[in-house]
Length: 205
Ligand code: SF4
Image 1 (cartoon, protein in one colour):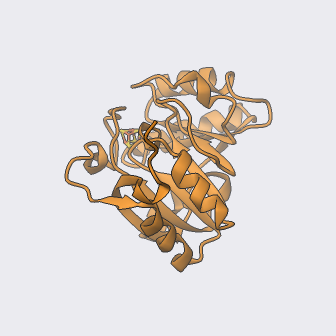
Image 2 (image 1 turned 120 degrees about the horizontal axis):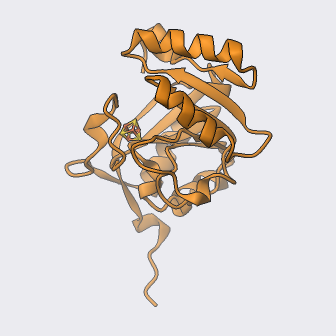
Image 3 (image 1 turned 45 degrees about the vertical axis):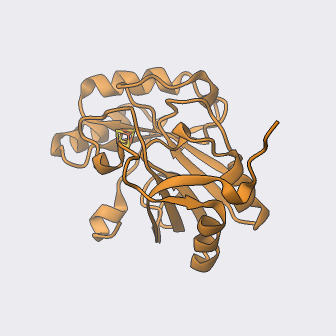
């Protein structure tokens, strides 16, 4: 059987950038983001619509990506999208791990889980059901809330993740009413926490 060398493996990349993790349990931590192109989930309020099609994005090799990660000297490397699980993440994460880097994933879980991660942020969306393989992998559950129906969706997803998984509700940034919905819900349901997109408050990516 023909094998593909890790050095020849490439991914369509929207961008890599060095910032802080703005959301969830790792908020405020120095992070290098690798944003992979391609998403078939279709959230109407998505703030990354330019990432939906992988066409036109430069494919970058694993050595190129690991070099970016090493040069940034981050506390964590966050693989995000788009929907990163559209791609086989085993080769990339294996190489990043071999450098001693801490690797996080942000995913809707809409495709079969691949890769080796230290932390998995599972952010399921009602527009495309999660693949069953994600539930055992989640470290934190983060559900974006736009309306009341999303709260019901969050509860269904909350029952499917492990008991130790931290559960967050995150207001949909462009809908001010969602902030009130999340605030009120968390006061009535102490097993949930509020996640805010702090990078947007800071005016950074
Ligand atoms: Fe956008 Fe993420 Fe939804 Fe895909 S899963 S449409 S990238 S918010």
